[in-house]
Length: 204
Image (cartoon, rainbow, N blue to C red):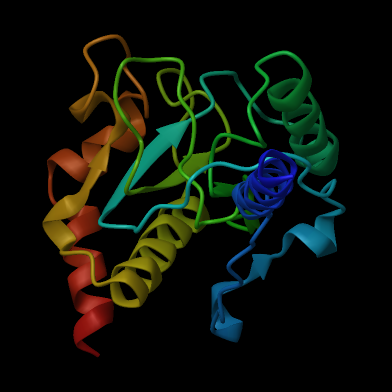
C-alpha cells in the first residue's frame, strides 16, 4: 500500500514539474507610440508551441538577415516564411530575433523578449536582445529610416532593461564565424553613431 501511495505522489510531482517547465509565458512590453512597433498579434504571428528557460536582458546585439531584401510589399510574407522555417527546419521555438526592422524603419516583434534568441554561430545569445535589420548590409546600404529605428529601439530597450550603451554591439563582436550585421550597418557601431544616438535619446 505504501508503495502505491509513494508512486501516486511521484506521478503528481512529476506531472506538476512538467507542467511548469512547459508553460509558455510571453512578456509584453509597453512601447511608446512613436516607436512604431508592429506586435506579433498585428502581423499575424503563429502562437508559440514550445518554450525555453527564460533569461534577463543585459546586452543589445544587431544582426542582418544576410539575404538581400528590396521588396517592401512582401515584408509580411518574408517574416512569416522566416517563422515557419525557424520552427520546422531549425526546430527553434520561433524566429531567432526579438525584433526585425524593414526598409521603411517599421519595427516588428519577433521571438518574445523573455526567451533567448537563436543563432547559427558559436556565440551564446542568452541575455542578448536581438535586433535584425532585414537585408544584406554587405551589399545594401542602411537608409535613414532604418538607422533611426535601430537607434530608437536600442534606446528604448536600454532604458527598459538597464543596458549600458556600450553593450550595444554587432553579431560579429561575439563570433568569428560571421560578418553580420554587414559592413554598412556595422560602420555605425564602429564610428560611435548608434551609441551616441542612444545616449542622446536616454538623456532627453
